[in-house]
Length: 440
Image (cartoon, rainbow, N blue to C red; front, top):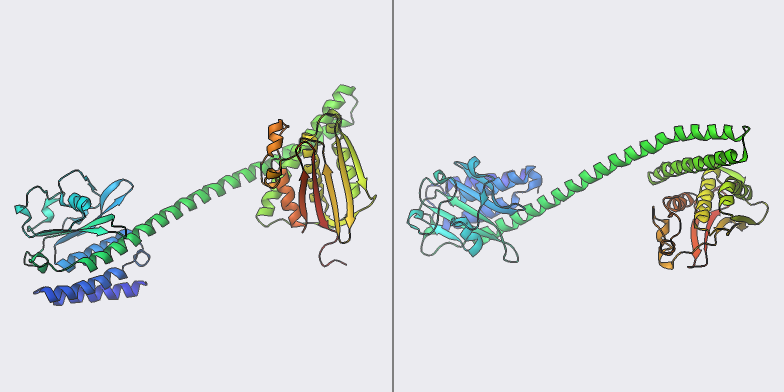
């Protein structure tokens, strides 16, 4: 409901109050209740900009309805019962004050008994106290009403003080307030729900903001690692050609291989961020997948020798594809790295490259412990580790590599799958369109 409609209904209600102010009989009070219900229904936190202001407007409508000098609404929050809003004399003194349900105040009795209290002579009542800010009661007339929810739970309490004791509400046959109170209860429930939703939304936005800052810091940190790693790898490549004994040469080669793998991991993470952000641009060219496979086998030679693992490349001599060669090379490298880490000493890795009509494929198969069928989809999620590999005590986990492979293959319009059984090794197969869409 818009702000203009809210203002019009409030103005109409105040006009009716002013015209009936001289004498409020039972008929006049009924008219006031109808106008009050319309005015209360028009109150909305979205039009006032604040739940506190909306509750204050409801308080003022109730005060005018009864002709009181003061009114207040008590609601429950995470810290207990408190005065959520008040209008009239001394209102600023009680807003936010807590209510002790164990005291003898009228409000605590209303909450516990779910019963309205009408005191035309509050000073004559025994066993109740006037609670906070007694100066808010210039005369002794006082009413307190429970706000009941759909399940009959107490949502809050509405208090009005300083009324004329001749008001119809104090007659022997009291005018029913059920309609007005139900309207207030519905509105209060909605405002409380909105407050909870707004609070939850604020928490979500705060967490998202913190997560964004964390991701940016991580991205910048990883990005800054590229330069020193590139320098280290360049120096190790220079040492590779220097005169040295066999042991020193092996140390240099192992260090160079490790540095290249770390740099490759850094690039993998950065490219994963780009793909998720929709900012990855593929530089597609036509190249031979078999040559790429041979290059991978050569790059991993030092790691293969360390564990006495052999590599066998099968399939055609030439299989051409139109794709981003650097990204495909990185997919190959991730699959090869996994195969080595999960292979037994002296094991064998088989690389197959082939084509079928408009598609090409390459696969990497190891002789490791295999992957439990229930885990085979999960391993393509970042940092997941296959259950059977975990049980077997295999080295490492699948980390971010397979997650990147899945995203990068999808960017190329292809698919990646795994075929594996516990104890029978694993085979990862990538299928790609042979040519870029629309190419001749």
